[in-house]
Length: 565
Image (cartoon, rainbow, N blue to C red):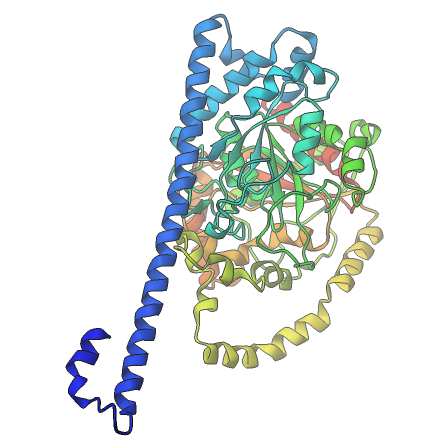
């Protein structure tokens, strides 16, 4: 601007009429320079925030490694491999009985977490305060999770630590107190010890962000662990945690559980408290988020639910219905009436998904359960309701966009005129669909069909096997099998039952999908190269029948274990 004025100084006559061309040009140049400066300054501030977050992570990892080294030197008798091999139920039993000490279990899992994180980049920060909690753990010996190390998803509040949701604007905003879930876990003797990675904004089922980077699948680093609870899935699937807490608004517990070969459970919304957790879609009420456990087996999920559904949680969050865990329903053994479908008419399952589902159906029938085919339809509008929060684009401003999210946000970057034209063209179609598929009407239709068939539970496909990196953002359309049960607010869980075979891969080469369109072709590319990866099925029950859903999951798990003996 200064150079421009000097070059044109001879044209400025201070005693005459102002030269508006010169003035306006100088103003425009000045405004442009200011905008460039503010943009540069904003990106520099974002970069500094990211560097501070990375430094905190690195410091916590180094201090944890030193603590593990010191413990191992003073306790060479610790049998780490034995500890890591135990199920949650057996681990809890040995801790309560005194066969194992909380210190040995804690340091064994911290050591394994550090090793898994080096391979998979699944952790955002080790919670160093957990060592202080460990010193006082004896006062919680009566807790159902006494001495159990627990990993928690990044967005679950822990005092003094960020809940970033993978976005820069939430950095340097540490929680002023523990979330209700963390408080109850601590009261039950559990030790939250690490936070795990998530996709940018949580609204993706990949697992990478500009702050902490990309998380890899524990079974194949070329594959995604899924999301948004992808760090949890990778850590538990890699053996670094025996129990974790995630959240689910479109499959965010179930997808990483499926991709990583573990069990995951999405309870009825508000069965567990969400107070103190962070989100990028606040105010969105059409499809509800649920917090739930992820573990190696179904009994681990049930033990966690039993521990959390206690008077302490009901006091801390009176909005949660005071319904304790019903152990009698969970342990019941009467034959079930099971609904079943293999294709929702929208996204055709991969060959391995279809085979796993048919094998599960056959085992259930041979065990004396009744299986029938209800007529259920999928409400595809719920995809739009979850993945188009009003402040989505605003949340991502001020920093880079993760590659896994770029395709997903293309519509937000279109010129205003183009968006208006598209909205005019699409509005009649959307209005017609909304008239036909109002959420409440849809829920009542599904429940009426459920009652007509006299069903207890439902068996249906679960997305899988794990995708190649960066495909989830291109395939939000493939969420129809999971997001449907967020819209309906039905409890749903995932049980791994098989692995991808060479025959599945060969059949995949000829996969056409239901329509042979672009998304069917993308889906085939996304799951290609999955031989040996885990494959799961999904179990569903009616709202507030969470224990029945878990009981069904345990039955599926039991039948496959017996088959493999």
